Amino acid sequence: MESKRSFFERLTGAVRLDEEIEPVETKLEPVTSIKQNIFEDSEEEAQLTVDVFQTPSEIVIKTMVAGVKPDDLDVSITRDSVTIRGKRSEDRTVSDDEYFHHELYWGSFARTISLPEEVDVDGAEAVEKYGMLVLHLPKVDKNRQTRLKVKGN
Image (tube, rainbow, N blue to C red; front, side, top):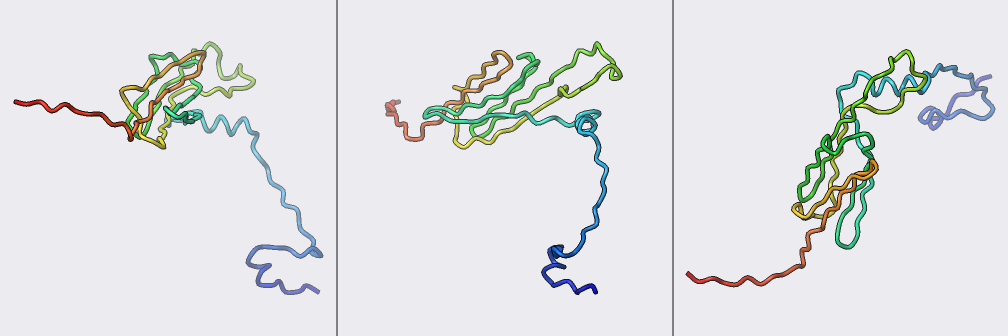
């Protein structure tokens, strides 16, 4: 005899331990085909991965741009955000049929980072070394004071 399911069991989909559960068979696609579908034939920009941290005087952003020439990078800075854009171009010498694995990303990428504090745009510096792009963004010192000399006409 089958007992009626409680309101909680119907609401949550819970199953009583004494009931048998029919197995559900599903077919999953291999991971490699999923990765190919994400990156192939896509005109969207990939999102660049970044590390963002601060020191007492600056905000530092690090990101990997291996395989990208410094001239192919565009870094735009405002007082409260940074946008890094670029393109990694593939020098094709092998056809798609000859690949065993094809996981590297080739194409446009970008990332906009909202900064936790205002930075001095004029004092910012970008350095690329061994494929690592490091941005040094000096913080705006809001407590800094200076005296102005009053000029007469």
